Image (cartoon, rainbow, N blue to C red; front, side, top):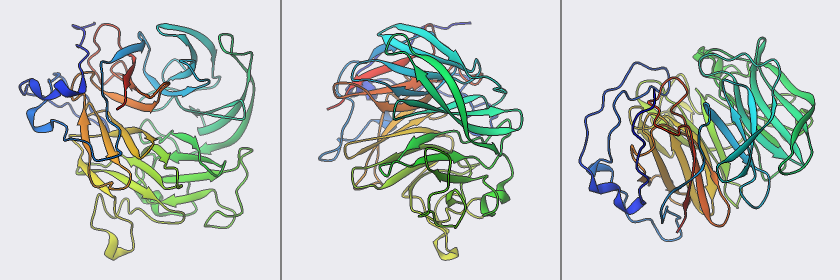
Amino acid sequence: MHTTPRPHRTWAALGAAAVTALVLTACTDDGARTLRGTASASTVPTAPAAGVLAPGGETSDIATGLDAPWSVVRTGDGVDALVSERDSAKVLELTAPGKTREVGTVAGVTGGGEGGLLGLAMHDGDLFVYSTAEDGNRIQRYDLTGSAGSYALGDATTIIDGLPSNSFHNGGRIAFGPDGMLYASVGDAGTGSDAQDRDSLAGKILRLTPDGDVPGANPFPGSPVWSLGHRNVQGMGWTADGTMFASEFGQDTWDELNVIEQGKDYGWPEVEGKGGEDQGFVDPVQQWSTDDASPSGLAVIGDTVFVANLRGEVVRAIPASSPAESAEYFTGDFGRIRTVLEGPEGSLWFVTNNTDGRGDPAEGDDRIVSVPLA
């Protein structure tokens, strides 16, 4: 049942409302809030540091009425974009503000829990898709036929399959790095010890060629593993100088923002959050209480790292040059936020996730929202 629509607010107005009590349900990674709160005075965004981007105007809906959207990739200079719906396994095309059409359905997707049709990425005109199948998670490359306004899914080529899967902790984010390689996050699938096992692909970030081969420069010969010791990474992005950031769900204590380096171990399940350096692990550059975050999608725009948060219901902006700092925007205004990405004409897009079974949908949910950046 739909509830009253949430107001669209400017970023400067977030501190005006009083705190509303929030009740948290039981969850795995990103438990829903059963009551929606307005912005808390304790989370009024601080003034952004010099060179850091921040939302600077009114929000507007780019798409509404989506069903558990997970990933969005833009295909052109305007609003043209492709959207994955986790549970329906559909790929939708955004053709104009408020207008979508079905591109196709990814065959063989087994939904349930946090699995289903997850990450999308574009490379050389092909669409790369991360999804959950009966025998595990997989990445496929689809020929994208047609053109803007008439795209269709062509033939599929499997890049890698049999990746560890479960009803939770599937990872699922894919992205092409500045080196032209395909990076993929794979969750621990509920078995934390596998994140420390180099022979397992669970709890890892993988690096592959676009054809699914192992690049020769990978840290472990013959292995697609790029980094290890992860619980459930769902956001990846790079700055102009090649620094790689990743957002990661913790368990009970700390969610993390990490700077990813090849071959490094980020500690799960031996350590959660900071405090693992004396054991040879890499500490996060920022951590948040799991009640306040559940960081999913991540986008680097200029010198700013934007992170979408599900349970925290907030967009965070983090200076890439000073990643221990952050500012918060839209706290509680849109509910659960799954994905962020760079929009056209100097804007930020973010994607809500209130229809995924853990949220409290308002009229028009789920939606893609645009806001100018200043």
